Amino acid sequence: MDYYLAVKAFIGVADTGSFSRTAAHLDLPRNAVTKLVQSLEAHLKVRLFHRTTRRVALTSDGSAYYERIARVFDAWQEAAADLAAAHAAPRGRLRVDMGTTMASLLVIPALPEFQARYPELQLDLGIGDRTVDLVHERVDCVVRGGRIADESLIARPIGDMHFVTCASPAYLARHGTPAHPADLEDGHLLVRYFFAGSGRRMPIVLRRGDEQATVTGRQFLAVNDSNAYLAAGLAGLGVLHTPAFMAEPHIASGQLVRLLPAWSAEPHPISIVYLPNRHLSARVRVFVDWMAELFARQAR
Image (cartoon, rainbow, N blue to C red):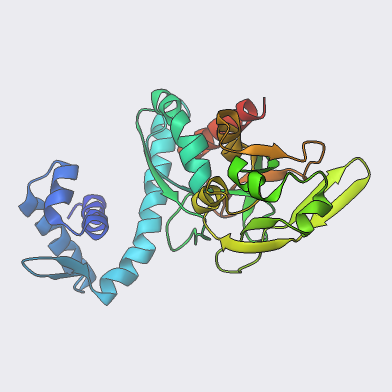
């Protein structure tokens, strides 16, 4: 039995739920993939899949084996890829997770440049504002803003996220334009962002010289998704305190108006986060370097 190919076939079927799709991906006949998985089952003396005419699903033994062997297989492929291609032409699958608006407004529009540089990479981009389990979800790295509370993770800073305070013209027509952060405490509504899981609100602390103001205000709506947060501000539901890259296109088009321009908030660091025992493969390193370039350009 070709153990490497058998494990590759097993992982392919587990990921896709299909012997046929795995066979097409590996450029093998379907019966060859079936025999590889059967050989692996015979070697391990367990049944790895429940098979019916309609679906393929992992058994409990198959799930336990997948959890461990998939990480080992990734490291195996990384070692081979690093030796074979080094830094010149990284290849293989790269799993990254990042926030919704960062992905849709900043990263994805710039990805053709990354693709042209590294055409042999396959990028799996998880998008959302929830906390990701890097181990169980087999994610290579995540891109996050703010302080990283989990001290068991490595966070490499790649840039800063700057914030602006803004609102829609329709909202300002109803409530007036604040001249000072204190004005937001009375007569105005805020749209607030809260973190999934903890429910904690993102704080709003503004500074002008030696002056500092912490804004709490009143809210009608709080959301835990950055796309919904922006949509609420555009709909005139309240004042936003939002990353500049989210608001600037809408400020330029007149859909949002910047408020309190003399006041600024402390920028949040943007970091690539990964496990401390995770070998940074060539494909992760080139992605980290490219993201740092992207944020440097955005800052300029």
